[in-house]
Image 1 (cartoon, rainbow over the protein chains, first blue to last red):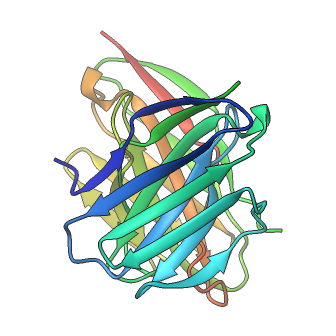
Image 2 (image 1 turned 135 degrees about the vertical axis):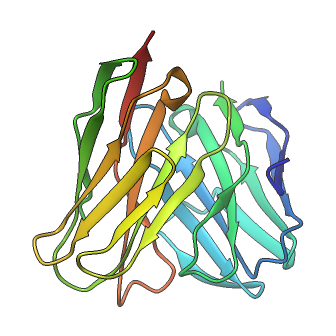
Length: 112
Length: 113
């Protein structure tokens, strides 16, 4: 039990599809994050939410759209993705942005 | 662009041997340095958060040191065990960087029985 749960674990989608990734944390944390792990690259920060307000948007294409309806839930809405968007998407949370991150198990996304 | 480098990229160590690897980061605007362990099919797990120059942290057989003036941190594993096999990630946070943690590419450690 990591305290941070991501669904689905695996997702295959076509370039014209719309899908959403979900993240849920039960740790009472105030900050939530989306990271992307592409092959042979470091973890890349995509978005940060602190107290449900987006505080970091790391030049991510608009085909990725985050949503944080409350401090326990974070979504990543996907539409018209490209094959190069295939990657492992990790959600994380922390008490505040200076504290260690607690990660979910990730969603392995394949865009065909 | 912040650059966080880890070396080596991969490492094979015999069970029982000790090992260490390096994380290099910018020496200016330092706020914190994180270490994480990422085992296959699991999620990354925080090992240490280090904030002060000269910090040394220890967790069982794993320890870490920090030199913020020259911009490096070492992670040491004493008496390696097969369960230490994982990718070890460091991440740098700068003082003006708000919420942003910049990760290195990781060191993949394999312990041979």
